[in-house]
Length: 177
Image: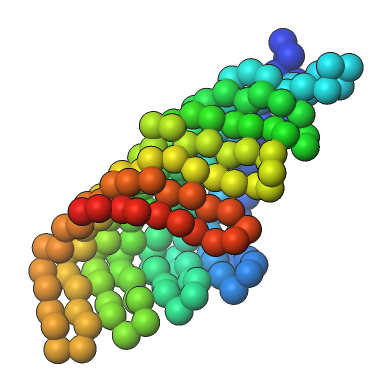
C-alpha cells in the first residue's frame, strides 16, 4: 500500500496453493489485485472519490456448489465513485469481467472451452440498510461443447440481461434472453 496525494494505491500479486471459503475452493492459482482508492478523511468521517480496481485470478481448478472449472482465468474491472462513511458507505460505477476455462462440470453436465463475460454500467454497493449489491447486468457466454446425459451440443451461445440484486436474504434477478 502506498498513499500519495490523498489516495491509496494498492497492489497484490500472490500465489495460492489452495484456498477454501464458504464451500468453494481454488487450487494452484495466482491472484493479482490492483486498486486506486480515496484515502479516508477521519475528521469529516468520509470516504469520497474515484475508485479503480482490477482483479485477475488464474488457477488450475476452481470449485463451488457442485460445480468445477479446470484451467480457469477470471478478470474483473471496476471504475466508479465512493461516498459516505463506514456505516453508510456507497460505491457506484461500471463493472466488466470475463471468465475463461478449458472445461467445466455443473452437476452431471460437462462443457469444454468455456467463455463468459459480464458488464454492468451502473453497479452499486451500499451498506446503508444492510449490505446490498445491485445493478443492470449483461451476461454473454459460450462453450465449444456441452453434454448432459444423452444431450450433446456444440457451439453453445447464451446471452441475458436485466436487473440483479444480491443481499443477505439472497439473490434476486429478472434476466431475459
